[in-house]
Each structure stands twice: as structure tokens, then as C-alpha cells.
Image 1 (spheres, rainbow, N blue to C red):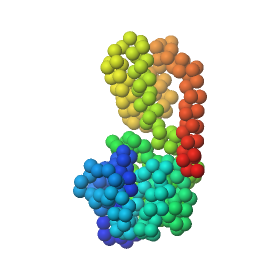
Image 2: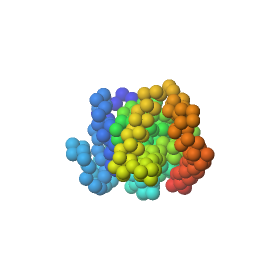
Image 3: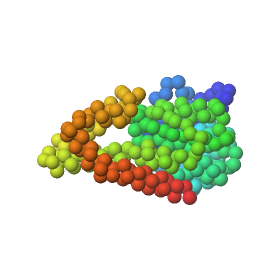
Image 4: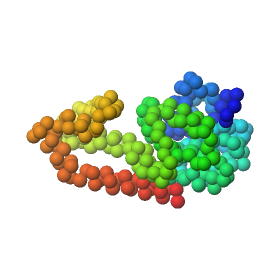
Length: 271
């Protein structure tokens, strides 16, 4: 990619919630000169882009692609890769956002010399608050890694890891993590209803409390979360009474089991 003078050619395969969120963030990068093509059987909300209904239609785009982003379900990834292999530019960088699919699986699908980056973003990428973790294989160049960083950082924070084995745990914590937070809102609202609040008020209180607390976490990045918690907890007060129930009720053990289950499922998806 070094010395490439023309606009970058990017092909996005799959434009669901996550693929669409990433694409929207990339379109907002003013410094990025790129032509985007999307392979998606359903209509997409980006009318100005080249839109292909299937991989056969996208043959020309794939042959000239600098970057191919795979944003399809892990269950169909092998079939998708085998379908595009014959048309894919051998020098293209392949970026996958699928859970469970390993770097070695992609090189077995696409060719041993393929440059592949595996990443796990999460849904807050839709508002530029995402968390992505990425790992690259040995065929990825410095320029390709820099490009991936530019794209992934457009939708939030990015961390690189050297050990691919960490990706299943990453998926369990941050990839699936937003669902746990949304569940907490539901549980908190239900508890409020049980305590006598009406449904609308309980949900308003729960949602805004999570929104405000997340804002505090962002504003106080250098403050330990335990300190933030302690700042709300007066000795012998209402918050301490509630926290004692949660902590003595093995909340940590529940989360340990949940993360273990999610990580195990990620490993299964890659087997």
C-alpha cells in the first residue's frame, strides 16, 4: 500500500448493524481518500456507494481492492471466503470482525500468504464510543496496520494485542459487554417497579443513571472505578446496604461464569 497514489479501494462484505456502523464512521474520516463498495443482499442506507448484491457481482471490486472487510456471521465465514478467494487481490489486507474465526483459519480459506487482521469491535461504535481490539498476522505490513488503526479508531478506542488467544476473552468482555449493561438497566428498572415505582419512571431512572455513570467514567479516566464507587457510598448509608447484598450475593461469580461461557462459545465458533 506504500506509494499508492489513487484513492484506497475498500470492499465491505456484510453491512449489518456492526458493518454499517463501522462504514458510517469511515465515511466521516475527512483525511481518508477511499472508494467504498458494499456486498450486501439487502438494501443499504448509503446510496452513494457501489452496492453489490452478491460476491459474483463484486468480482471487479475485489480484484482491485486494497482492503476487504469481512463483517458476516462466523457461521457463514468459510463459505464467504471460499466464494471470494478466486477474485480477491492477493495484495489486499483482509480485516475480519467475526467472533471466533482465527487468523490461521483465514489463511487456510484465502491462502497462506494472506495479510489478515482480526478485530472485535462493539456496538457503541455506532456513536463513536466503541472499543476494538485487534491482532495481525505476520504478513500485515506496517502501512496496512496503520490503515487498520486509522479506520478502527474512527469509531472509538483501539487496542492491539500480540496474543490471538486473548480475542475470545475480549469478545466476552467488550464485544458482548454492551448487552450486559443493557440487561443491568432492565434489572434495575424491574427492581424499581417492585419497590413501588411505575414502569415509565423506573426505566427513566435506570437508563439515565447508567448514561450519567458512563459519562463519569469517561470524564474521570484516571480515577479508579473503586474510588468512583466509594465516592457514592456513605458508611452505613443506603448505597452500602445495597452493595453488601450485591457483593455477598456472588455478583462477581455470576460475571465470571458469564464471561467464561461467552469465551467458550467464541472458541466453539472457531472450531
